[in-house]
Amino acid sequence: MSLMTPTPADAQRRAGLRRMRLLALSLLVLAAIVYAATLGVRDATGWGYLNTAAEAAMVGALADWFAVTALFKHPLGLPIPHTAIIPKRKNEIGRNLQEFVTENFLTEDIVRDRLAAAHVGERLGRWLAEPRNRHRAMVEMRKAGRAGLQRMNDQEVRAFVEDVLVPRLAREPISPIAGSLLEGIVADGSHRGVVDLGVDQLRTWLVENPGTFHELMGERAPWWSPPFLDERVIGWAYTQVLNWLQEIHDRQDHPARLAFDDLLRRLADDLQHDAETMQRAEGLKTRLLTHPQAGATALALWQSIKSSLLTAMDDETSYLWVRGDELIADLATHLVHDEEWRTRLEGHLGDAVAFFINTYGSELAEVISATIDRWDGKEAADRIELHVGRDLQFIRINGTIVGALAGIVIHALSQLVGG
Image 1 (cartoon, one colour):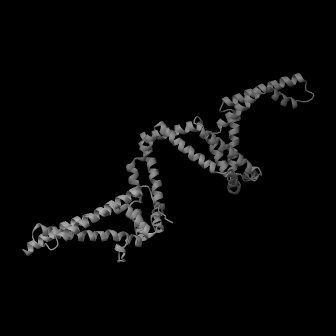
Image 2: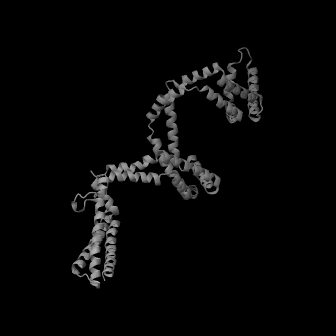
Image 3: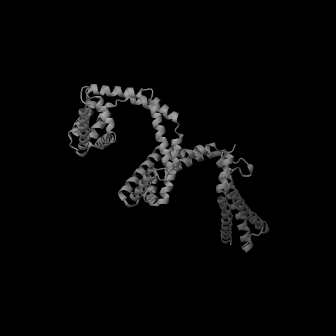
């Protein structure tokens, strides 16, 4: 079975090769006819020059025919040494070609120079600056994203969580990491937004559900307390709680906030240094990870995230699309107008390509020799001749012409010396 599939352009190449062969052969035949017609004329007249030119033209044509033919096959089918070079030495040629490509093309310096000359960053930035191109980029990213998400089987995700992720997390101590993270959050004040949200939600719930508050408080009132007194006390408590929550929301230095911050700091420190707290945190982590519902919960969370992403990808008015377009537009602006940012990005790209070339360049070039090794010798010679044979016929044509000119010069010198 052939490993090289013919292409539509092969028919055109084959026709061109036949025409050039016919032309070279025609010149040889013409030289032979002229030589035969002027045979025996060896004087200083024009016929003598013509006879010598025709003779030398035939010699040149035959010599170059032999040279060209010897590359691809045995001339006239005769097993002459050092002929049919390509079929016999294709593997060696493939390895030499591999070395040539590796040493002269797949080098870090050449790749970096080409990247610098291509101005990839600026060209990409100008291309992405066009809205239609940004939309095209988003469409292609959506295709890739959808393909990636759909290839991730739900059961495979669950198996990965249960068999790989959960055991790994169970072995890794989480309390020092959690303590360090919590310490940084408190130091930066990043938790204040969560506190505000919690306070707002609690106060909103109380405002919308005063009856529930009264019922909960009423159940805890003493049996001997008069109902009217209970109502007044509960109403006063309800108002105080609302005011207290509002004060916490309005004042960043509220004692409750400061106490909560202090609690988080002590918890962060205990998670990193207190053995008992660290043991309790690890025990809680283990109970959560080994719970029978852990895998199902992780799968449900993954399915929800996957469904949300797929839905957002299909809706070009979604936040994902709008934000994605904004990010790409911002990237385009930086690439076009921020030279320092563009240079840094192109430097990272050059580093990545250089790493790829230095690490995998030889393996990439090895594709050449590995592919040629698989070819049949005769078929490889035929295919190579099909691609370059037409140009090689010019060697035969030039040999015929140069031979004729050399014959004229030689005949002239012979006449000069002999005369």
